[in-house]
Image (cartoon, rainbow, N blue to C red):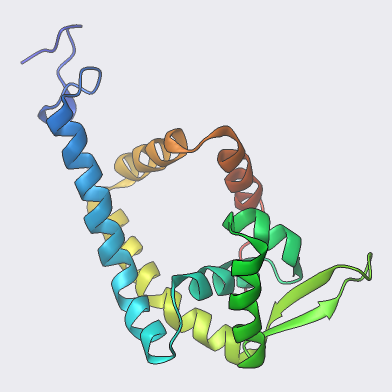
Length: 172
């Protein structure tokens, strides 16, 4: 069956004329996928009395060792007060190290300790496995389409931040 512009829709849906029900199903799929994506790390974090903010901080410090507190604030989009609580806990627990900036001594650069790297790896292993399995199941075209959809949902500043992160070399 062809759609209004004469093209057979893939997956049975005409993507140019989505109904509210179709959009609602997409929103619900995102909610449930996110719940599944965060479930395993949440269990590990709960054991340590940490939350998702701790995980996000560990992830981005791992992604870019030496990341400044200011840059992390920008990436996470949280208040300074909120980030300071999270960082203080991670530093006090020996997971993150804060060093004086190389170029600007007023800056604080963040690095994971060995203990922090081990926790970040443990938290992300299950997420990588879940993403890998989903990507393999969906196939390369679906993966590319998924990324396009996610990027199209981002506002201009968020997309700029994401693309800047994408250009970093892969973490060790």
